[in-house]
Length: 446
Image (cartoon, rainbow, N blue to C red; front, top):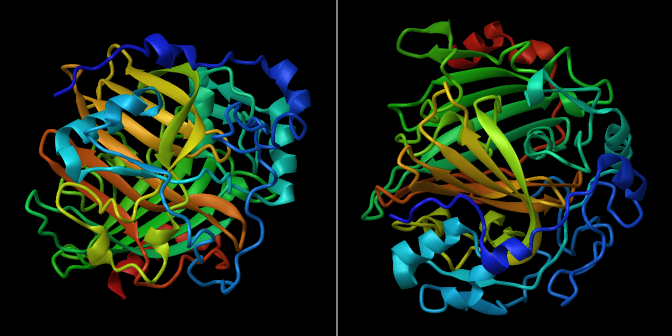
């Protein structure tokens, strides 16, 4: 197993950019920087284009409320990276992708397509983000956020934990209902599909902002297979988790009871994941960041998952996407993008199965696109990928499929397959009463 590295050396380190002071950069938002804080200009060699507003109009054939239509159906890869030529592209590969290429040989490959900066958001989100640049501040030693609402709190980050909070509080609409499948394939490729329904109310994203410190209401129900069906999870997420910790409840169909669930956090196993990911790996990272010291390593140009429309449309079958050891590379898409690199080291005196984590965060959307997780010996253990798209109906750049690869077992857990089910719905409306313990009980016994 590849040994952990404490930093980036040689040419990779030279790619890190200087970190601007917030007071200097805030005036550039909407000018040389996008309203979200990304560099508006393209790269010097033209590999990354200029941001011109993102993808705000759907392509022909898209129906509002339907599965997003691929805006680039005729594009072909510029080139493919596999184990045989990985060294040629090493300066733009994450350590996690290098490990996957090495471990799985010619089986795992990265088809690299032309870069499209599709991430787009409504005008009120841009305005809120630019306002947050002057009013948002860290609380509780970086383990909370004050003075921010709607947009990302720190569009001009100077600390690693600020980038983490940008991911946690990024705008994904005010309400979301999604039905998707999850799979945990065995090394031989056999798997059982798990069906999950989630309802989410993003309080922080509303014009009024968070309700106290509660930023999100989250209700998750497993609907298949029969042995798991009926398990329901309710979470009230906090944007100041030390002052007001996350609250969680579960409904167990066997006991027909609602119970408090304080262990739904940190490194406890994720829902129906066969122990292949932790609770805080859902959405790449969620919950309190307090167990790690977060260091901002700078910004780099890297090949990352992006614009995964082939994986989300109804033309793709779930069985075509899920293969032994990793997702089917015929359907994945990688592009060259600038990402913030953040490294978290486990604080002395705290516990977590991961001693170190490294996040690669998209400058345009603040989504963690790729993540690496190291065990207590300092060896890379798991690699995560976020295959996202720009949803036209809002618009917002958000997820479709997450994959969490366990290098030590040769297995992975992947979730978010919605191509054969109903499209994600952003037009639903929820109230706080829909996310009470009583609502959890009603969801479990219906």
